[in-house]
Image 1 (cartoon, one colour):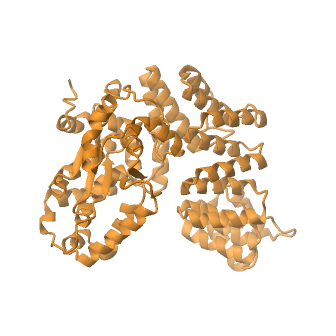
Image 2 (image 1 turned 135 degrees about the horizontal axis):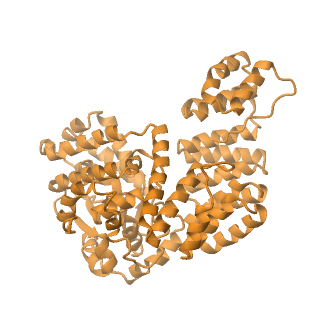
Image 3 (image 1 turned 120 degrees about the horizontal axis):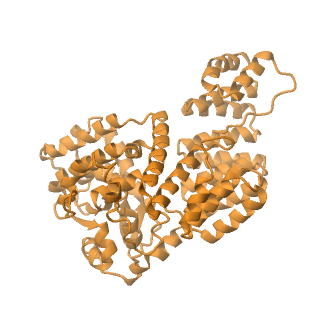
Length: 548
């Protein structure tokens, strides 16, 4: 985590020096026991308490580490390093507001604390406050002009906000401040890729490595391999592209294992939902007396099926607002668990009072992501497809827009992406498990159709690319709206959005293109083992046999 301990006192006991030596060597697990012993022996020595916190944090025992750092803060409330460490741990737990408060304390104590600006920049990014994030990263570069990490954070933020001019200017500054650094070469490759000079981009990115000394950074190496894979794909060098995708996913799988994500348990959870709807256990739901006048709209589908493109086009309509990948359904699911740990029993025996409470939880959470300009609010999170039965139980008139794409292209596209790791995205690290995931998700959708009735529409990515207005006509009908010419200006909408929180951030600002269609055929050999599982879905959705 790059946590920073306070300065050592002038005279240091031998056991503390030995402990510090272990910490510097990165032996955090081995240091935990002696750190606990030293913390008891020296209860009011901040450096000792800090080293215990670092040992815990580096082992990702974040909750206990956070308590430990707060203990240090009580001993040394004016130590900026302590508050930065607290902020980093709060950020790790996605408690962004608490993290922001801690980092602001660090900056108030030390206004020239460059690392604190770096951390708070990431926090503002998490809060969706993109200008604040950029301001913080610019400040970090100003304070730490010779530090590669500060330039990397700024350049990466500018790249994902699709500001190519600012990216080029910041890259020129990096060339001057850290000439010859691998970060400079890396972003020169990214910029060349954005400009369409793919041979140069490939050359630049293949010339650097971030899994070897002197500058190791696993997340940048993942990104480098992902970019190279997509570049080689565009160049028609499909074997090289697949090699880079494999390396990218191998690194991500290692990270997923470290975080404790495992596919078998996740699939068991999904399979319980599938078994529930396939057995039509919803027939046993007891009616409750509550008005059905709330009909939220959900944009769902398997990831990499065109949800971001459709989202961007729809939000270009003056009467539509899209909440992108918000936590409203997750919060509702958590509240359902509080009603009864046995979800099936909770759904069967749900009362009007319980349903009303769950509706309020959902709507309250959803409103936090609304700016207020649209009369139709669309909740866009593709994998809410897994929660359709629960959504229908709480909102019987819920409406669904299901995005579809050729199943083999969708699965392959997930394999091509360097996702941040969570339980669902860890499944995408193998083609085999990504295909199983697709099958489970679509089976849940199909089995849930009796609950949905006519309150849904399917939107195919390929049709949207071929004929936008015709494809969107049934979508707009479901929403009770008419076509608006501004929807054709979706690229401007994308540029004005700033940070787009999906891997499609740099694609939706481009004109509609068709080169992603039938891409899977270039990778038919490595995908051969999963095509039989996907073929029934390809036929069901009108794409035909995969052997044709």
